[in-house]
Amino acid sequence: MWGLTGARPGLRMAAKFARRNAMSAVFLASRLSRRDKRVWLFGNHKGFRDNPRYLAEHIVAEHPEIEVWWQARSRREAEAARAAGLKVVLRSSRTSARLHLRAGVAFLCSGFMDLRVPRLGGAYIVHLYHGTALKRISLDVDFERFVSGSRFGRWYAARQHAGLQSRHRRVSMVVAAGELARRRFETAFGLPPERIPILGTPRFDVILGGPAYRRVAGDDLRGRLGIGAADHLVLWLPTWRESGDAGWLPAVDRAAVDKALGGSKVRMLVKPHPYADFDVYRQRLPDHPALRLLREDDTDVNALLHIADTLVTDYSSAMFDYALLHRPIHFFAPDAAEYTEGRGFYEPYDELTGGHQHLAWGTLLPALREAAEGTDAAGLAMAERIAALAGNCEEPGNNERIFRAVAEAAGVPLPDGRTA
Image (cartoon, rainbow, N blue to C red; front, side, top):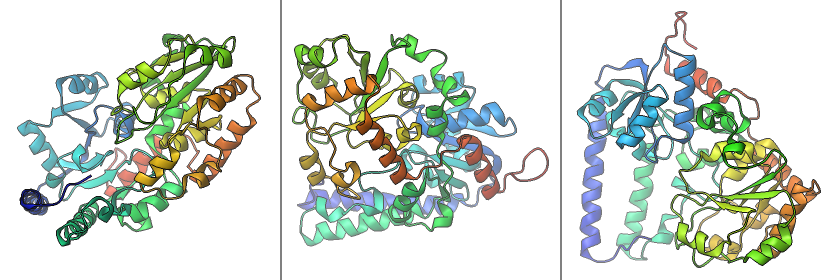
């Protein structure tokens, strides 16, 4: 993962640490800025999407007393945020630098790269983490697994860990979707439980439907995707493999799909991870009416979870989100043994699935037909298993609950003269 041998990597690491120390000084200096508690800044380095988008749109719609800004990285992203009613600033602009020094509350989702965090000293920083981790994250990662066994490699791993600890201390609140997420975040962020409240997540308001869903999907998403009212929509969300997709994705031919699903109500939408090799999926999956391959930016993934009748995944945190709906879940993981060897998991994969993951198309496709026929006891049992493990907040109103909690913690004055 990191080739940390020789002089050049050492020089690069030294330069990286020097920049990090300089940014720490900027963070401390930015505490002197005069901040406006009603100015809330959002960003996501992956684009106008996911938890920051959902919460920002909710606040624009329900709380005009808050000045909501989105930091965009491209003109296209900026246009999307403006169309949703947000104020927009481009990351590369001087206005962005000034806004970071003015914002009273700031929101992350994917990590510290979402915003210019060194300029947020003194702001109330909220991490709307993008899922409940199955794979080890942040401080829970064993960095020494990825470096050489040299003294420098061990020193670098220790510095990575210490650097993350220091940056995490800048975060005021990490929002947890449920009990499992909170336990993960306590160790991954090194923060006390009181800074990791269980509030649900903005994603849940989209998955459950209602205004948040309609803001991102509009009306009749199934119809726009060509899914009939009587069809059984299966959503397959395979996650990213660092080694690529050619080595793990098994091919399936049209005859096999037709034999298993022909004449059934199953319609499977396949949405690979944004970093996946789309061409591999296109080559390995047949042209068949029961299958449709979607590009990453075609449709909001959480809106798809709302309309899906069954979920197929492998190691994606989407399993915990979808379990909120108590609909069938199936695991398709032909490379389970290899994948778990290469990535650090919180628990053995078999403990998560109970050993009931599909390793080949030959068992998965008939199970999907059973789901469409209403006889999928195994898929429903898996959904209940995952829901119980996650312990997620299932009450509706996640966006408003998070808004109220952040406003209260940050001391934000509301129109009635009180905090939230």
